[in-house]
Length: 261
Length: 271
Image (tube, rainbow over all chains, first blue to last red; front, side):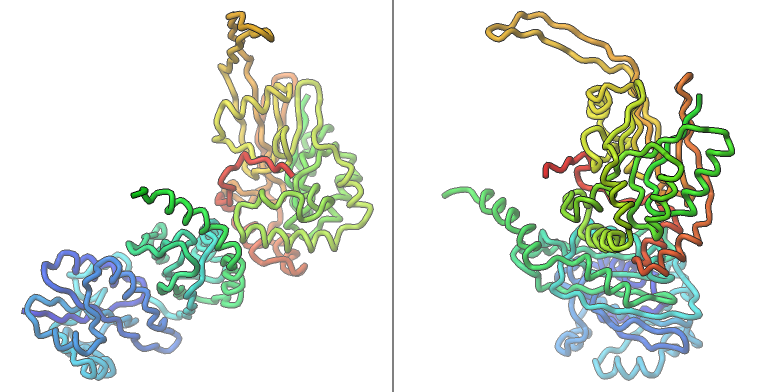
C-alpha cells in the first residue's frame, strides 16, 4: 500500500537527511517533492533551489519526482513511499493532517498528492529533534552557480569563512559545487552542528569544460553581506583557460588508462 | 643574555607597538626582525619607520621582497586562487602607500642574518617563500638547518609559533674516488639542532588574536614563546577605513588556526 507523508520543519532541522535515511530503508519505490514553504514576518524562506532534489536523486537514482503528473498518479501504486518536504518555521496549530497550511493543501491538490500523514520536526517525537532551532529573524540568499567551477583550495577557504561568520551570522548553508575534475560536492552546514558535511555526488561529469549539473548555494542567517559573498565567489571561480589547465592532464590520464585493443 | 625575535609584522602598528613595549619592559636590548613588515595591514609606512627608528636588525620577508620585485616575484607560492587575488589587492594597495624611502629600506634588507651559530631568516635558508611547518619531514627540516651551518634556525612566515628540536640526526657517508669506490663508510652523528618559529606579530594564526614573538637566551639556549594582547579592534577599523578587503579584518579579529597552505608547503620558486 502506498504512503504519502508531508515532512515539515524549520531550516536546518534535518528534513532532507531524515528523508534520505527513511527512503534508503524503504524496500519499495520512493518519490520526493520539495515545496517552497511560505515566509513569515522577519523569517524569509529560501527559494526552492533544487539542491535537495538533486542530492537525493544522486543518492537514489530511481527516485520518482512527484512534481511530474504521471508520477503523482503512481502514488496509488503499492509500496510507493512518497515524501514531501516542506520548510516551515512554526509548529502547526493542529496535529497531523488538520495542521497543514491551506495554501500548502492547495499546492498538493494541484499535484494530485494527498498526504496521509503530516510530521513536523520539533512536534512529532518520531523525528529527531537535536537540530531544532527557533528563528526570530532570518534572511535568505540563493545563488545560482550553474556552469561555475571552483578552484578547490579557494572553495575550502570560502566555505570556512562563510560558516564562521565572515559574511554575516550564518545559521544554515548548503550547496552543490562543481570541481574541475568533474566531481560535484554537496556541502551542508547548520549552526548547531560542530562541522560541515561534505558529500561527493556519485555522478561524475567528464573533465571536459563546464558541467551541466545543478550548482547552487543557499545561505540563511542574519545581516548577510550578499555583495561580499558574491564578490568572494567571483574570486574563487575558474575561468575557461585555468579550467582547461586543470582538465587537460586529467583527460590525458584517462586516455592513457584505456588499454590498447 | 636574552634577545627577542619578532616576525611577520604585516603593517599592524598597534600589534608592533604592543610587542616592542613588552620587550622593553623586560629590559631586552637586542631585537631581530624576520621580515614581512608590510602586507595585509593598514599602516605599512608607520611600521617600517618604527623598525628603522629603533634600528632593529631585520631580514627581508616574502612580502618585503614582492613589494620591491613586483607581483611576479613568486605568484606560485599562493595556496589558492582566492589567496592570490586577495594578495594582489593587498600588494597593490601597499605599493601605492609605501614611500620611496621605505621601499628602498625594504629593498636593501638582507635575506638572512647570522649571529655566531644562530641563523635568522624569514621562510627558510632556501627562500623567503618556503614554509618550514612544524610537521615538516624531520630529514628535510634537519637538512635546512644543517646545510645553513646553524645550530638554531629562527624563522617565521607560517604565522604559527613553535620550537622544534631535531635530535638523533645522523649522516651516512660513503667515500668514493673519481675512478673507484673505496668502500669506506662513515656515520656522522649530528648534535641537536633547533628550529624556532617566532609566529606573527601582525597577523597571528595560532588560535588566539594575541601577537607572538620569542625570547632566546643565548647562554642557556632556552626559548620562550610570548603572547601579547593588543588593540585588535583598532587595527581592524583601520583596515576597513583604508579600503582593504574586510575579510582581512575578520581574519585578524578571530586569530583562526585555519590557514591556507600550499599543496607543497616546502615548494621553492625557481624564478
